[in-house]
Length: 134
Image 1: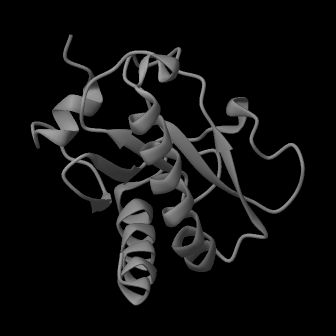
Image 2: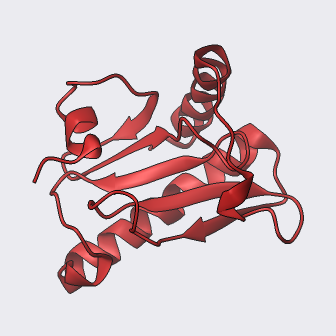
Image 3: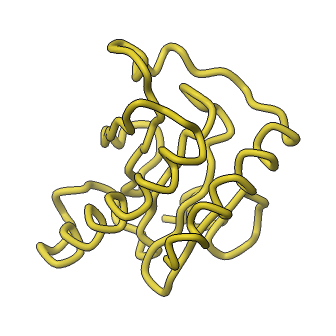
């Protein structure tokens, strides 16, 4: 199995990566529900979130939590919603979605973002991540 996320991790296809370490990577969704919609992905390709070991699961959630604050600051959202569904791409990923009202996490609200929009948002998020020293 070689998911589109593995291709992003291996730099085989481009993405607006905002943060990564040895185990995880975070990049903007090209079809965001709201601007700033971030995907947090383990570099180890695993299909189903509950197939992760306890330590991997905890680390994924802690990584998502640590990225929520800079994402919220960059987007000026009231909250950051979290979603894990895992049907479209067979590689565990957490959606961090800036939200201001209930109902905004509906996946039917996605739209295609331009490369310029994504680049601008990625830079804002990176600046906030850098401020926090992540």
